[in-house]
Length: 266
Image (tube, rainbow, N blue to C red; front, top):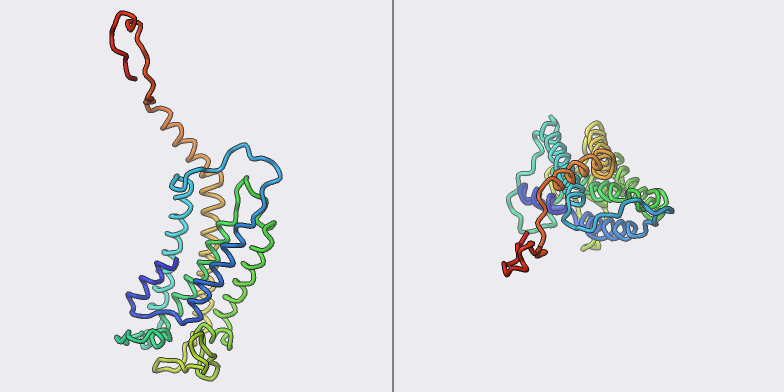
């Protein structure tokens, strides 16, 4: 998720504010990764063992599928931004990137942060499903607590202009700016409009995209990768593999070995 957002930011010559990186790289990542490890085992032993391959089809399909979905919704949000009438005269045009503290107050970075930032949370929610090997997702109480907490804060930041949203330089004006990680004094909004406030209807569009992104990630992992669809695909793959001639390293001796002939490798 971060790699995608970094590449897109580099394309637009922008970046996120320092509190945004603090939450993305520190608070969200550490708390959710730690809470995921607290999932309890299932009460009954599963009839199947979990995959033992980090690069197996099940693991790769889960990771790559969610990665593709996240990229798709990120591009969808950017397309929605550039298609909005109110944004046509507020595109970021600064070319000086020497000071990263002055290139984060724009609508491009704001939208990218809101969408990709919530992908940290939505991806973790999808990974919290433990299939038949773990207890129900709701039994991981610490993860449910953090997921609800960060989701609530993220949705408030998206929809409600306030000092909380100004912490992330989102939906903010100079009247509500707060101190940053690297500065004691509040820093004014660094753009010609002195605000990053988005129209209310567009905020709800972003909210809808984040919820659809969450639903798509959960459905992919729960129903496709680990659900009935994934099981059917796994059965088909095993059948195709079983039809191929098996190759072993055993040396079988023919009946004529006793007569001095060399062993036959099969």
